Image (cartoon, rainbow over all chains, first blue to last red; front, side):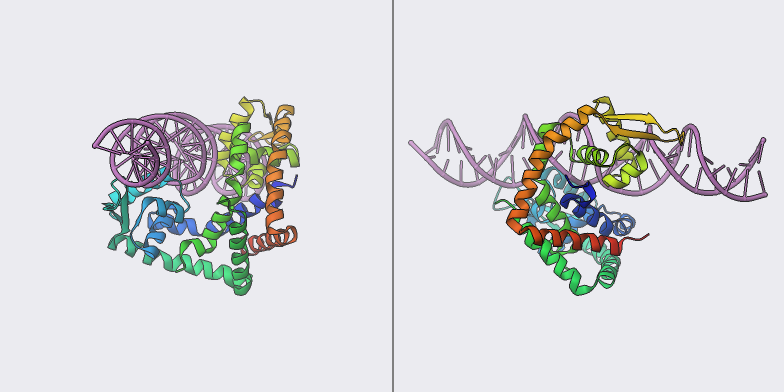
Length: 142
Length: 142
DNA sequence: GGGATATATTTAACACGTTAAATAGAAAAA
DNA sequence: TTTTTCTATTTAACGTGTTAAATATATCCC
């Protein structure tokens, strides 16, 4: 068995940790967790959506999202409405306040990400990302 | 700003989730969490070590490791001793029972991982992992 | 239509992630 | 040596990860 840090899972976790470590304090200052940030970003990019799709897009489990939406709605960063098509579910969207938070914070996180691309090479990084996506698509069980 | 799922962080998280999803139930059946498994694997591969090095190698924060070691020690899977070189810290090692659990479970997880290599291509996967490691090494701040 | 089944969401329970602060011992400096 | 400073670990607090079970509504089958 390979040493953990050289394993596939270990390598992925280490990469993710290296990427996020400098970004977490930025989100912290903005008053959102990494997961809340994911939710806001997905909603901002996709528009109003139901919780199940949102969970899938933000890579969150249902129970986590349930808590997160409650919190973000209480803080006025997202708006939750009944789903007219399905009495069980609801539809969530970003508020103006939410969008403002996103805009202000994205500037800083993007600068950090640009730094990564600069250090590693823009094309090389794009290739790495697309290989990762190909890998994920290949092994995912449907 | 890129859609979250195409971003660097999103791609890494999605890949990790795809890799771990089938493995988690195996660990679950073995009675260990993903993080406990990481600790056991690192200890098994490296031998007795202090908590700080262990945390770094298993990609865990100190407080998490503190809880995990207490639990694993209570269950007899690891052994904790005072560090003769440093009165503040301690040294941890895997027990025979811990090693047995590792052996039994590794067989299943490795079969799963072999499946990934088969689907994606062994050489292609090795290249992807080494690119990831290069990336992590490049952006890590020291 | 009415009951069986499936799906969306929430609740519960327990472990970890994450930051900050507390504790205690080691190391360095005065 | 003693005061200061650093370092290893733990505790605390709160949010999330993860699985299982509960709840409520939709959908399907008869």
